[in-house]
Image (cartoon, rainbow, N blue to C red; front, side):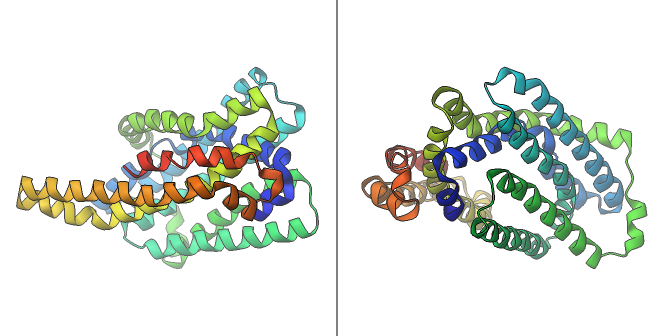
Length: 315
């Protein structure tokens, strides 16, 4: 990722980041908030596997079409040129392959997470190799937009491969779309769609606004800093996932123990966030120059401030 940013330089890297962020504003319509709900239903009603997966697959395809329609409506309200709009629609086409994430839901429900890891690792490895090759070939910006689609495509292929490794090919006939099931799923998921939209706006609107107000080079500087800040966000997810059972067990034992463990967790989160934010604040210039080079010097000031968002993310 750092090498791609160095190769594209701030203006082109900013255009790519903007296109991804603009699509990200509407990405909640592609997922439809179904993931957690479908996993829960698969656990409770395994006999409905084909019906739930088939219905979810069709709903996610419809969601991808909705994303395209909304982009078509939103694009005229921007100051984008034709080339930027092409990048946006190329990246948006990756949402079609998100329909295959229904296999991810199946593996979650069956506690077979290793296959999710295999598929993601394969996708990341092949796309990284391809990016290196295209950098060496001095490929144009549009190729790196297509790489976003390629990564989603490989991930979809990986999911399908590992699903049928654990199933007979004939099982596909059990995949059915049922209107009443679709209605039930959407009835449960609409609050998650709304929260997903709000989260998407919160996470992506900054780069869209910067492009409109300051231009694509400023987006490149900002995006370079944000990528370093957000690189740490996996830490609280890992810790909370690991400690979740212990906190649930404490709740069963006593209210006092439950709140004591919660407090220790919050304390731990804040101290880890501070341990990351303080050094980065003072070393932001060094970190940016080491990773991105002189051309991204403005990103240092952004990183110095943006790294403190991590304290609240950790909480």
